[in-house]
Image 1 (cartoon, one colour):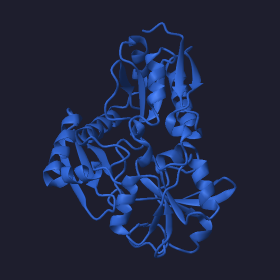
Image 2 (image 1 turned 90 degrees about the horizontal axis):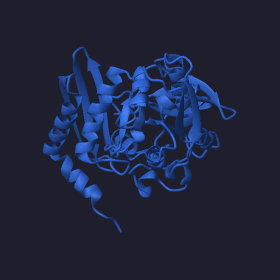
Image 3 (image 1 turned 45 degrees about the vertical axis):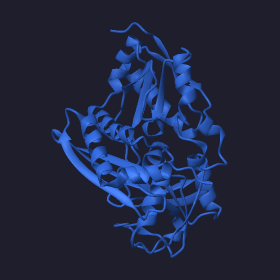
Length: 339
């Protein structure tokens, strides 16, 4: 048993990051009586640049590089990340020590409650919902989301939206957009929505009323590891690794490893529309993946089931399958510099 009595947790300063880190700090205190966990705020490049689309800023550790440097410099003992923000390769000297239980991995369409009226949204579908008029303005900062939306609703006017969750909701309330797309997990963890509700989720924020509509994964595959938290620490810090083991959730770890292996083989990031979603089925893992063009007109999809004993192998195999279908051509086109 470790004799460590205090750990320093590095976190971004956003409301969601602090909330997620606070959840993990509480879980650590509950798992280890007498353990003190102190949170230290660290600003990242992604937090500071809010007026440029993510795809234009660059995607290698935009929200994690400064946190990882703090770990390498022994300034903090562990960090809590949204796993989808992590590059597919972990820096030398660091390790992902724990993956807590996954939250709702789906994306959600968020609209003003006043826009819903008497519409029946119990079986919401992006494809044929009367909630989104022809040419409706929808905000998203994700190329992955935009690609999949354009494939099923090419009529929608997609525009970039940046900022934290509150900022994006405020822009929606101000009428800058008719709808925005957010991660269900973030809304749930912030306490805005109730993850136990399978249908429309009504909530209040920024002095306005909204409705979040989870989008079926059959219509929009999530980002790699969306809804999963990854807890990172120094690879040689045996004491911290031992303590963090209490937070690890084997099914979430398997899903993360499969999806991240898929991403690593495709060498994708924020600048590429790539999606993957793993589901545990008994002793097996089912992985679905997608690579698409920016305009959504070309998409390569695949699905693979394999042994839960080697989730990374499933991710690699599915990536190879998509490459054989033409995913490499899409990626090569996206990598071509544009004037």
